[in-house]
Image (cartoon, rainbow over all chains, first blue to last red; front, top):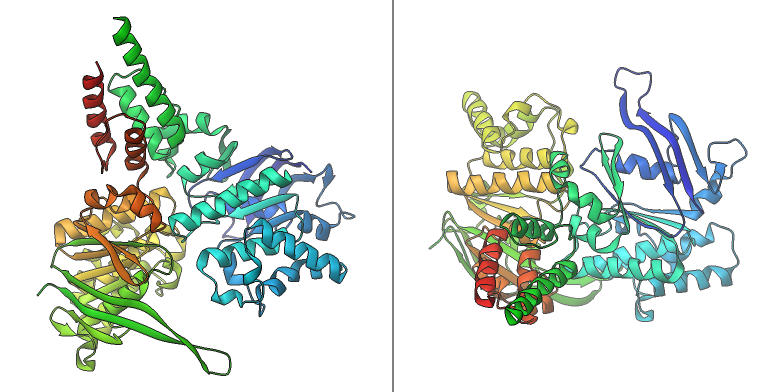
Length: 290
Length: 287
């Protein structure tokens, strides 16, 4: 179900001396099934934006449409919106509270008023989707590793069967393998279920590796909104707002500056490897011909 | 003996169930030996749960060894008499800046440490100013900490530690919650403290690219030191690091993958400049 933002602005503490404009005139279309990366420096408005998408905060001006309906209309069912747009906050494992993993994941669907059977089925599916094995189901969530806890917390949101999944820095504080596990699972989940995923991240390398579209926020406005390779072309502008391109993009730029005819719109290790191998095989064939 | 010496350190904790019955014993640190010289920049890597933070907490007497000994500036951490000296010698900065800042105004927060040590008021102000200058936050001294970005807050936390004039500063994932600019600012401040003030730095991190400036890297696994060496030596072992749930900087990984594909790039490349130089070499050989 697509989400459309039409000239959305948000001011914290409106009509007070401390008013701060967090979002300025944002218009965006989020169609079904995209994998979107949302990047921006601390305080750029990312978190304010994602909290609008499931109606946790209300726009000061402008409209947000979920599946064509205005979410601020009087007859709009916000409860349904929140079950369709799942939001995973930073450090979601701090919100785990039940005595065992399975009950924790059941908590969300239980509040939707489903049958016991349906609740358990959803919890089971959600745990499978994030790669938590049966042997952990009846353990205390507090005995799991950091990465496992986080996956259980994400399963708690997935059990609501959201059509849009928003994750706010899901890999902060995880070791590299924990980070890859979570992002691979999310990417797999997106492929299997076709849901829309919005990933808020400070890691340009991760964003470049997984998403189809990047939205860059700066001071409450959208600065860029395009495919990763187009966005990372602007590495100087990104740096001026506290961001960067992936390291591999800088490597390719350096080679190009040094006079080698290689593409520099490369954003992942795979692409860079392919491009450099292509360069060397051209060199070889030029040599054999010459 | 160096500024920090760890000998045969073992740390165990007892797990208990809700009724307080003993469920088992976990060995978080399993026989570690370290000798860190004054002025060294040391990084500690390791996956979640490998024992990095537990080790760090031994270095300023937040935790005590189950077996073995830790000396900070020649003082045994288990000797209660030295505890305040030790915490003053080895300052600690944690992951979340919001949990470490207590003052209403930046300079007040930085002055909190020396004030508690009984430093004279005039000297407190001198130390506050010099510490804020050292981390590049002097112009923000009159700000409220909640108006600062994550990287700025974290630099204020570091200033708060250096105002106590430590010989050594331990940073436990100081950049985990920061955006790229915040990370750069913090790492730059830490490197300057090490280069200019010769403060010993122990940096615990999950970001491989922050490690390349250190003199020595220790990689922990299951409470033991699995690997140690210079950044170049460590990052030459791409496969071994993967087994330890870690990775290498993108530039190192790209060079490694090209080598696997038959392009003769050397191991342990750490910067894009080194990469470019090695690339020149490969091209010259190919022509």
